[in-house]
Length: 69
Image (tube, rainbow, N blue to C red; front, side, top):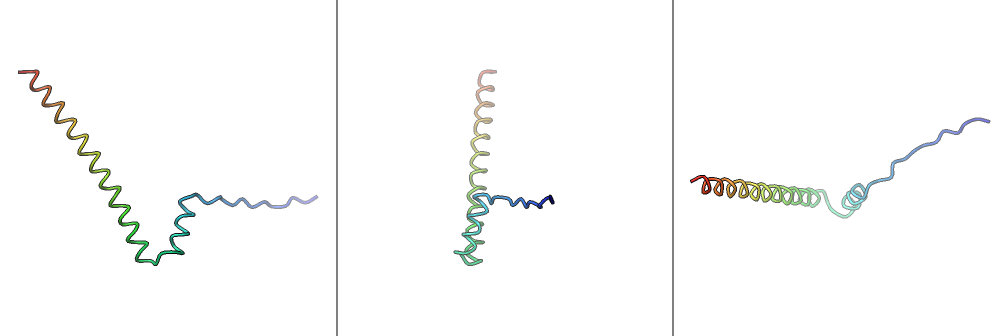
């Protein structure tokens, strides 16, 4: 009996499926604009997180300074 080769195909992720649908529905320029907008949202979130962390550090330094005097 001869062995039959088996092909393993990867199951596409949800992201891959959404990108495939997006490429069918949206024209190239719209797709680029959408990705740029999402990148901007992620960058805004990162900056907001950085602001919160900086505010925490500044408040902690101010509290430390007021206790030291």
